[in-house]
Structures are given as C-alpha cells and as structure tokens.
Image (cartoon, rainbow, N blue to C red; front, side):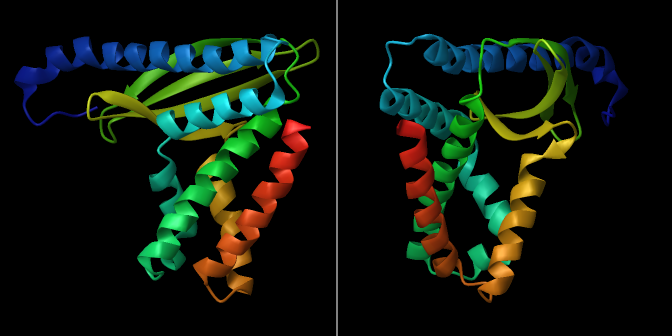
Length: 200
C-alpha cells in the first residue's frame, strides 16, 4: 500500500481495515438473504429464483462484467444489440448462481479474511464453505461505487468468474465471427433452457 504523502500513513492504516470490514458485513448480509430463501421450503422455485435474480442485478456489477467478458464484440456492436446482451448476460449470471445453489444443503460458511487493495480500490473477502467431506474457498472482489458496494468478480478455488466466462464467450464468438447478435441468440436459448430446469 502506497500513499503519495506520508502524512496520510496513519490514516491509511486506520481506515483500510474498516473499508474491508464494511464490505464483509455487506456481503454477509446479501449472502444470508439468498441462503434464507433456500432454507425456506414454503417459497416456490419461481419466487426463489426471482429473489436471486433481483439480488444479483442489484449487487453485481453485471454490465461491467458483461462488457469485459464480451470484449471487442461488445464495443463493435450496435447499441440496441449491446443493451439486449447486457440483459441476457445478467439473466445468464443469475441462472448460473441459482444452478449452483440448487445443490445447497445447509453447508456452513464463514468469512475468514478480508483486506483492502488500496491500489485497485477493491476489498478482497475470503469465504470458506464447509460440508461434511470438504472445504471450498471463495474469494469475493467487492468495490464501492457511489456510496454502495458491488461484487465485481469472485474466485472459486482460485478460478475467476470473469476469466472463466471470458474464455467461454470468446470461444463461442470466434465461431460467430465476433457477432454479438448471434451470441445473444445463443444466450437467449440457454437462458430459457436453464430457467425451465431451475423452476421445475
């Protein structure tokens, strides 16, 4: 951690842990909302997914992640195609997380470490998920923007969501000559199929 002026050094030491702790408290609250929905057996699959989708749309930097994942195909597409892609990508992201959560069976989790990356203005929050047989480490990257927090990426066992999706989408876009409209068609079909599985 470097600041240009040494006079701020003590201030930095005092405030950066607070920033990370605030982000951790926020993240825990949002995770608990989703987990509580899975513990509540009276909630229908449709309502449960709607809750997850709303939570993802509010708390994930979906547009920024989607743009990074699509790369040049996004920047070269028409605005209408871009807007449709972002909506489809956000739905795709929510469906992916809902699919992962279908395997939830009251595993325990705890936030085991948090630190603030001053250079990139990002909180890195480590979460450990325990089951009877193993432990999984998830690292969340959380950024504050306009006085609120957003998830900008997360890594499971060191594998980044953004890197995984970028590789997956780049592979598809190469077969489509970088045509974002064609990718939208594929995403729409995938989303419809995934949604049908999740709500039934």
